Image 1 (cartoon, rainbow, N blue to C red):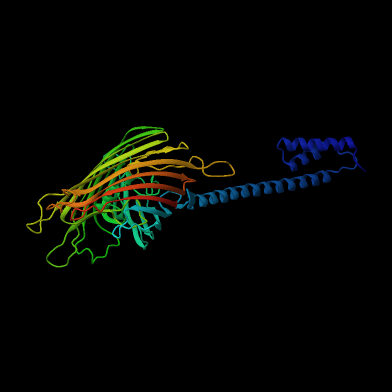
Image 2 (image 1 turned 135 degrees about the horizontal axis):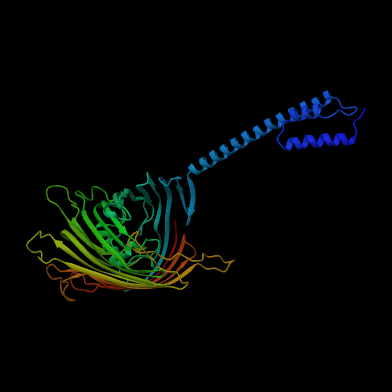
Length: 507
């Protein structure tokens, strides 16, 4: 017989209420079965059976809940392990086109580097002579590929190969060094960097600007000449650099240039270089630079085997371009115990206007090899002034990395569809390099001990386009006036007009 509906409803309600109050299903069913009069058709055994079934369902539910808790714990552990594994993996970035791999803790870093500069030039000379014929054409001024990086946080290294050249291309080691950058004495914010190997320590202000960020195709003649004494690309040595937020100091003892055959230098050259630079006035869009430098040759290379040494220095320089290898000013070899070059630096930038200049004096210590040689010590000099106006408004900022100014970084990269055109800049420079010393008068033979290396004055105008941070295009016009006498006193100077163009990518 079926129980009345009201009774069934009451039983279900009692069971539900008990469950909500935390009463075990079996105990609840037992209480209902024993305490409630059994209506027709519902026996005590049926109520107990119902309780058993409810109890089984409860246990199964508890088991499922436990499994769910275990699965959540396992999932959380697996997710954390995945996150830790991912966090421990090196990161690969491409900043300004430069691929860089860095470990999670920053202790190790490896970056690929490349510079390619392709130059073209057209020379017009007056008068044009066989001795000083500057050939128009093209060349790869620089074609470098290499890498640099960090190991164990405090050790830096680099290895670069050079496949370009100055008027001729050949594969040669450009730089290879190891550097320790973990020493911070005297409470310095940045470490003193100790380096050994082959590299180019900046010799002056213009040399402190990367060769990929210069205003013109080449550095001023005097700056290029001086950097070749004891610094310059591929110069071996041991040196140190210290810097703060607004200052820079470097010192170097150097040797030969990588790539010079050992047969050409029996005893290798020994030289030195030191430089200080300051940024005394600095703001968001303005900077002032002052500095001084000294470099020299302690012992010129001995080029002769045997007991008699042949030591000499030779000062010579091309026009401010490298498509042709002809030097228009040249002292020829001077028997010498060495030389010293002193330099003063100054520069400033304000918003999109930039200007800089340097002055150098070069004193040569002459070796007397015969009574007829003059006891006078030759001295030479040179200077330049240059400036730029960035049409699109970018700023040449000062950096303590090398103690100088950085080049233009386009605020908006070139994109014809969006109507952005990169950065544009106009630049001008005037430079003088005087390699004459007691040169005498025109029409007369060279005085005893006099040197007729010549005087070179160059005016240059440039238009630069920076589509982005990797590609640069430079167009220069250069007017070069050379005044020089030969040994008999005849003029061998000339005027040279040059139009040149460079396409470059660097990262």
